Image 1 (tube, rainbow, N blue to C red):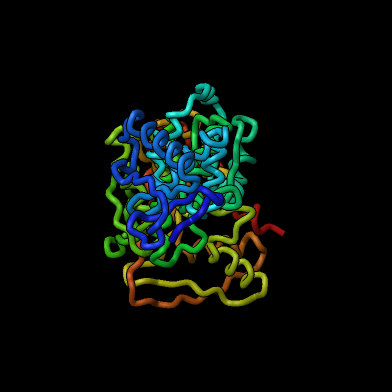
Image 2: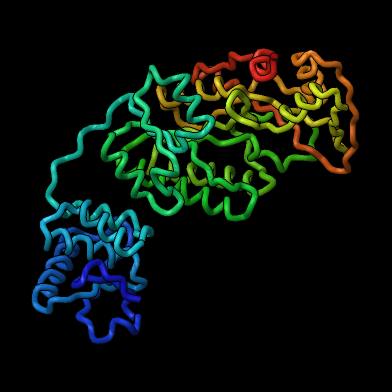
Length: 404
């Protein structure tokens, strides 16, 4: 299929039968990624301009009609019409609907255009993906007076599709840190694994390109597969063992960042957080179901698994946001466990909530023939290296949610 950028310039896969009879610029000798030399790129662009001028109509073709063809077509369009590369590249994306161009070749082609160097990164200016979400809003609330936040959401860019929206934001704002909070909306299907990795890889590519430090919010669920080992206190260097798609997405994301750091492509830290609660979220749902049952005088149902009662190490969102702020400020390398001060059984948690709402506590326990991962994260490293410690006690945090 030919995709026309305007009436004279289009792109397609080289072997597409629709290209027959058209003047074709073959760019298959170029490679995806940043490896193409500027001389080879300029030669292809110059040849394309001459062919377009002589024939009046031109197709730029690579193997699949996605990256090399559309990027070179953008360069040809820029030279022909006196546009900046960014202007012509945006036109190509809009006209073709193609967002999957390879980030590396786009950067090398952009570099063939004369332009003023980008301003230096601005210390204290932090871009937050997922900035309009629960944790992103609390981060602004907790640390908005310490940082110049640029908070972006899925309305601003599709991170799973391409890095170009994020790249444009970093070029514009020159943020020195990215806090990556964005997640796929639906996180229980297999699709979440691929989407999460694509989003993180796009963020990492932009960080590498611009020398931006990355803070990645991970989760305790990377250990959710450890269901048959009793109560566990786990350190920051414990290898993940995930169970379920969301957990797998976080565990593989952690591995990806480790690979990229070993290859010296980026500098990053991982904050591995226990379940976050607080004003503005309905999670964990057990808290709200319990409060509702207590207020209505109903019996609260809790569970007892084959290896014991489940425990939660709840983390107040204020403390979670503070850990992100400290990481953005200190820029430490490595993985840090971020968790509440204590782990509490769901039965004791329900009893605490009943006391807060001022209701008698009546419960029943259902036995389940399955195991539960009772994980407590050891936060010693975060306390010593980040200077972070949880400040909101469980009773105080729950009272802020449920006190009349």
